[in-house]
Length: 335
Image (cartoon, rainbow, N blue to C red; front, side):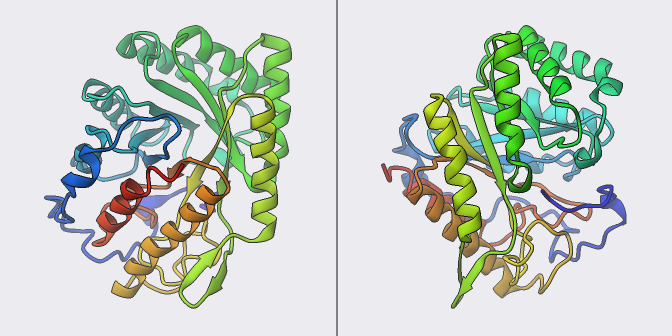
């Protein structure tokens, strides 16, 4: 859970160095040797870089093209909100789908609103959801190479969530379905999975958790707490027993915050941003990704790629982000 009160991004101070000037020729350098030799083995890791609706409207999401359009383990996801730059999300989905050379899975995350934490009744968005699903069906041939679902929406009834998953299946018969929540509401995974299966005969293809919180820190490196590990492994076991895929829906750190491992889902900077902080952010991602891989988890959502306008999580302007991408690619054959 990213703790944002109303997600009023335009009013929040960001202070990210260089964010006002988009000199985005993707200066980070592309390691062609690494990604050209990667094969799309389903047992290899997969990293989902989430694109948020409130990112820059200048095509920042296209900066991942060299990786998305190659046989690298990197794919992209689009977060959809009906109250915040909805058309931006539609444009991104269409662009990704039309340029999906290697037919990678494209993830669609229905936040519904920017403040998904406080949605109590999905029926008020019924028409929006149906129109979006119809649009998505039309441009993707019924959901080809699409993985779609909700995340969090912890206060809406399970029955409502299940109903809208049934609509997803009707509109997008070729798509796969996911659901993930924050660790504190993990019991909803089993409730929704069972209700959807028992009442609609629909099986979720993927379940997952967000990994936010305060991490253990030791001489510049971080690790997950036993609490985090225990819950993650509990639901990974549930997924394995039901022959579905477990994944980490969101792993995120405040970009450039040297103390981003403290209350990692919070907006406020504890320290930063700074040059040292940007380096630390990359190291924190690598530490937790490595720990997750050791736990047998190979699909990880990175939250996020293009955050802007008060969203401190966007990695796009971290001058060391290519180190993270190359780490992901070079470690893609850990199995």
